[in-house]
Length: 591
Image 1: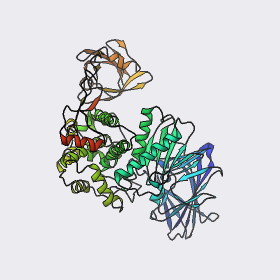
Image 2: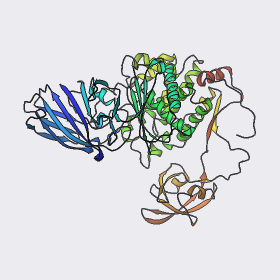
Image 3: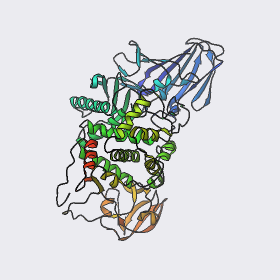
């Protein structure tokens, strides 16, 4: 079947696009058009169809009307009545610039096909064309093959490829760098932006070159970094030959903000290897109508997080101390997540559809992020391999093996194959590691793994001259409710949990003193650990009280620090891992 889509930016001020689907060589009594319920890379079911209205059909653009029946929320059935060609029209409202989007404004069009271009059921593997009817001065940026320039028309070999290549039109700032001789475009849409063009080009070039060195090659002929500047950051979504990031327009300065931008970019870029080509076999070809389950998301996302940090390190965009600070910060988040004891990485991956993307008040106590723990487990697995192989192998060895045996040939990874690849490529038996930290919920001894590289791990002590009193600890996470303190989460095994505090409580006073969201943390500082206090709070609109004995706050910061005397192997692991010389810590009175 010949399938051609037309996207018309017809009513941009109303954010409603007009769409046409032309089908030729139709040979069935009916045709089903289906809009996806999820987008690859974003593992949750979404009602993208809510903006669709007015679907009609004819036997060709000017032919007789054909009946269109809506079968379910995202499926329409067109009765062809023997027609060999079918013309379909409908409109879609789109005004949300997020990573998975259809967005239409008077100066911009962004198309992720899964949100506005239904596929023809039974014809996912047929080639498709897309024509954009846009103002003549708009520029189109996409990794799709160009079939015609005026009007702009693009071709995809199948529907999966169409979904995997967003189309962006408007007036972007378009830059091009050529790391390793491969053209990489940087497309920036949106007004404002405190970026420096030369620095952006230079740093993204370094990032790409480091990624290629890490994996040992690149499958790319070209690539596009899409950046949409906004006031609300949304994150990023990976594609086979591009990524789409929505970032705050002020994200490029100061240094800490810019580092977060580089980290996001590195993560999404590294997905061109891990997820897009090294992938679970269930992730493609896709069933867009239902959940697709895999226990490997911890590797696809968490390990990608770890590798993307290594890329920044190897690119010289992050120094080793900053890299270790990043890992220590992740460890702090993990150690403050009680759910790490209740959910394994494999299970967290499997139930992502109803868990990670749909957090609620009890999530911290019963779940753990496969991004967060997955990144730390990947780091520990790397250190274990380096230590046991005497620095002859590493997680990079595993990655290169995955790339050679699965990524390059396009072979999907079965659910039980990852451990086999790890063992085969390193010459080690890592079954126990996987049983404890991937399939199980055993606490990760970060200090023990750190010692493999001549590092200790633990709370970072305060400077000796810091006489700030230790604040009391309730064990609650709160939100601003119009200036009031509203409890969002009550963490397990904390004073607040033992006192019966519950999500939704509004704390209005401590020992009779009024508290506000703005001054809540300062208020807690007046009640050190061990102090009994009485909280006045509204629970479901009714004033009540709770007695709490304040606890001890978790450490403010953790750190990986050089041990006093590392052995030869530990120093070698450190130096091959971080690319810098291990040095004995300087003696000092405080940190």
